[in-house]
Amino acid sequence: MIDRIREATGIDMPPMDQVKDRALDAWAVARERASQSGQMVRDFTQNQPARALGVAFGVGVFLGWLIKRR
Image (cartoon, rainbow, N blue to C red; front, side, top):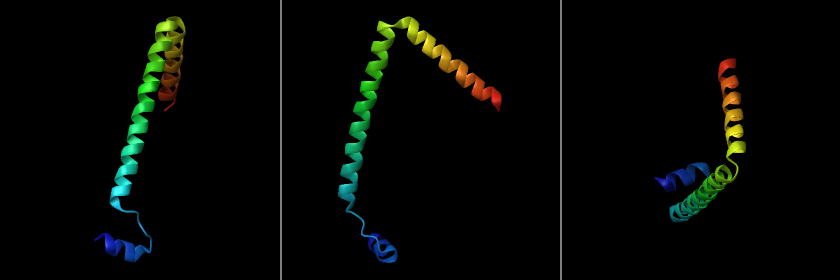
């Protein structure tokens, strides 16, 4: 099936093992960055709770304004 797709499109596709490895690497990087971001948010809220509350309030007002505009 893959051979027929390659012949029909004329595109030389990389082997599926390479695609799978690249996808797994990208997933690992994304998971690590998400973990770091979550830690940064926790640190920010613990160190500056008033400012974090103000940011949350501002985001809520902005989202409410966007929803109300519809």
